[in-house]
Image: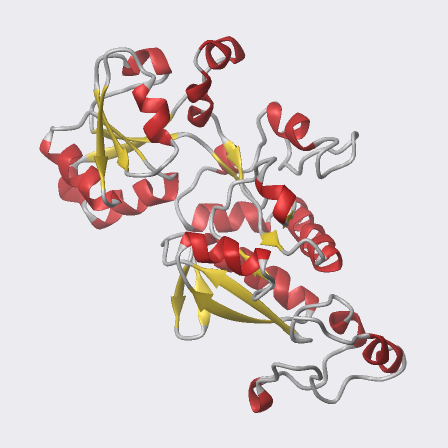
Length: 310
């Protein structure tokens, strides 16, 4: 959608915008008295940030008109600082990406992994957190490295990146399920030794289903030599997440990245990660390859990824 913003920008420089302007108006649902600074962020509707999400608790879920979960809380904090009202639109993962790339929404959130290919069709903020390689294991069992997985029964969800990784482990048998519940059910029953899922999903299941008797363990990532020998092992490494925006939303991306960076500094991200049972040491300290992956791609050559104190 193309909007005329030159007149708005001129008027906004000297007064508050009394009402939202532009096509696609939602009328009475739009915020009033949007400041010039907020309007300059260039959201589809001034003063509103439209967010595509899928139900993926405890990262994102919608309760009423609010997004809750780790990503939801991070965005809510940043949006408040920027004077933006959050309006969620529920979809699936493919719809999240498509909504951004066609600019039907301002942003999508919820564990979206940065990749060189994906950034060609959109903008990524600085990482709000880094997703560590997590394993759901039966209580009393310990696995640390890829070598420890050889010959085991390994489970994950159909279509997840770990499918390829598991298939590359010598002697391991892949069990792929329609959803995470299948992984947890077979793990609890002893039909699977290790389940690969996003870490907060495992932590939530531990609390909600104590009968399963499972633990969360973080894998020691494979070495560069191991990944070179078996490229599919790259999915056993941590990945950096990001809020994903349309290619032309440069001002909004920079503003959100600045808020995310500030949250590393002021302890807000550490507090939120702990709220959902995550380990800040795992979630908020980047691995060595994060900076090199983005330098010269969508970040300057001297870019340093945000981190809590080392």
